[in-house]
Image 1 (spheres, rainbow, N blue to C red):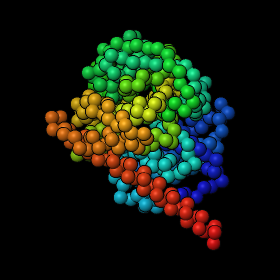
Image 2 (image 1 turned 60 degrees about the vertical axis):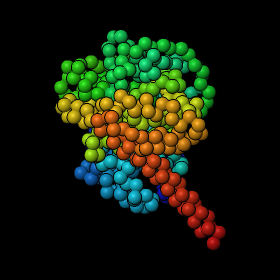
Image 3 (image 1 turned 30 degrees about the vertical axis):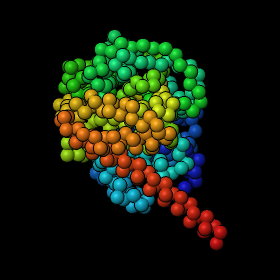
Image 4 (image 1 turned 90 degrees about the horizontal axis):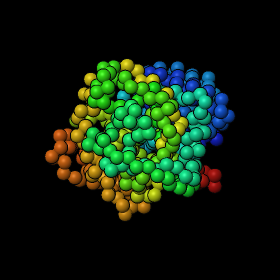
Length: 401
């Protein structure tokens, strides 16, 4: 659909970085790639930002680094929607929200050369001694034995390996699922089983505001920090078990995009925020369970350097959705079991939410809103596919004549 330049012709990995602050973190990830001999020509960096940010400086950085990439502020996103025939779906990606990572998914989907996507948050850095991109790709290609985890609460705490010491539960983990009994074993994965690779984080843990307050921190971070020693090895969650999926350090196969929409948060009448990647992870895990796929967790770790901010501001963003987060997974668990594709499972979950009765829950109508947006997400992807087919046909006809 988009014309390729010589620089991006060989790129098969779309690296999506939502940023309004520390966009130069990208330099560290590119340097990590160079240090470990990873081929930078495979990378195409998409910076998703806002009109009030210095897009010229971001573009100059990509040029200086010699890497393929583009910068999209709000105006350029709207132009992209128009050019790709999906302007009517522009509302699916909220402005000035972490959920604008969904634009990166649309961009990836519209360019069929991308086989993989990588999400990186701008307040993270790679660990120098680990091949960041190479490890993610190794995880996605993993075959062999790996630890498998379950609990009696049907939820796996991704920080379980040293939980007795630090007592942490990540953002989005249901409060009702705490104090779980953890069981581990070993499973054997075959090539192609892993469709997402979630790298975890040292330094500032990814906690919600309630847990940050309980940890005695008023600056939106946490008094308790994580180190390498808190992570004993890689693991997957047993089918039927759920886990939090944080998009700050995440790689995935192209095929999951229909079921990986980053949910519409922040810009809604219910003021629900901070659960975009958490809920998308719930939906992706359900789809993986139906289709016999896995989300791989552990390395490559990143260093999370969350900037200080008012914990109560985050609390205000999270409170409208806390009750809903306790129950969302229960409603989608068991949905779409007869479907045979990511889009099929996602459509079944979206329809269940859009058509459900949520009157008993505070802000329950937001579930209906999310379900409707999920169904529109699939329509948008289909529209991009039709445009791609039309463009391909036009090119063939042009060659013939």
